Amino acid sequence: MSVLIIAEAGVNHNGSLELAKKMALTAKECGADVVKYQTAVPELVISKFAPKAAYQKETTGDAESQLEMVRRIHFDFAGHKALKEYCDSIGIQYLSAPFDIPSVRFLGTLDLPYIKVPSGEITNLPYLEEIGKLKIPVILSTGMSTLDEIESALTILEDNGCTGVTLLHCNTEYPTPYEDANLTAMIDLSEQFGLPVGLSDHTSGWECDVAAAALGADVIEKHFTLDKNMEGPDQKASLDPAELKAMVTAVRNTEKALGSGKKHVTESEARNKPIARKSIVAARPIGKGETFTTDNITTKRPGDGISPMKWYDVLGQTACRDFAEDEKIELN
Image 1 (cartoon, rainbow, N blue to C red):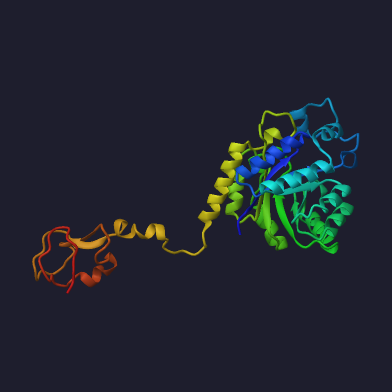
Image 2 (cartoon, rainbow, N blue to C red; image 1 turned 30 degrees about the horizontal axis):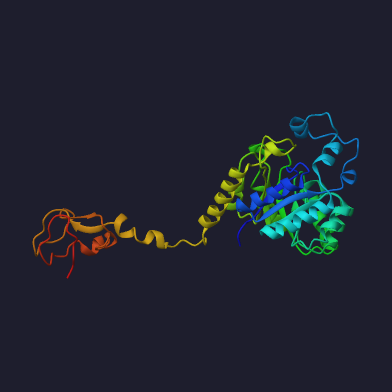
């Protein structure tokens, strides 16, 4: 099964439905399987006293509150319904992460094959109960989480009817320092919970996504933007379209390169065997009836004659005819 590549548009559309549609088309053109957004009723998610995160202050300033910022860069349920219909029309899977219970219930009406739970909601019990009641598979980001918190969230989801979970290893710093990416924790999640795993990557590049594919990720999620110079909290920690396309290509090439896991001679290399390997040849002219010794035979390319692995079978035998220097040795 191929890695599911989710192009995370998030809120990089800045509240513009037309820009969100353009991002969906760009994600498809770049080769992503899914384009993902965020659905929220801002007043139900963020209190008026909630400060911005440090990275949000760096990218959008401190003149407005977190709530004011989120109000400005979200659109309503009708917009998301229209966006889902647009994604269907161009052939890319729409996905969104809900941040409140009404958003969960709304997304449940869109006949989605799975739903995304963001890292910040992994300890939100009533929210997780509503997610489980959708009775569809869940992609669960685990940023900032302990194993105990993940286990508790999984129990709530399962108890309420969730039909399956994929765990995404995640670090919620934007951008994530490479030394904090801790990619092999993805393997730990797989071993601890016996579930499909993947990566929600917030590093500035896409090396970690290729590495995740090599480590066996089932899902890779990566933020992208149409232009890193646009306003917004996540633009600078996102890939531009050229980078997203390169990332998708690199992940797909990595999938191909992983192969079957069984050592064998491939079709592409088989033709090089006689060119790269050697045969037993005459080291100097050899007369008929002369005994083959270490002085008069050697090994040289090409490898379409007697294999050097037969060296001791050839030594001591007599020449059946005259051999010129470099001529492949033949036995009776």
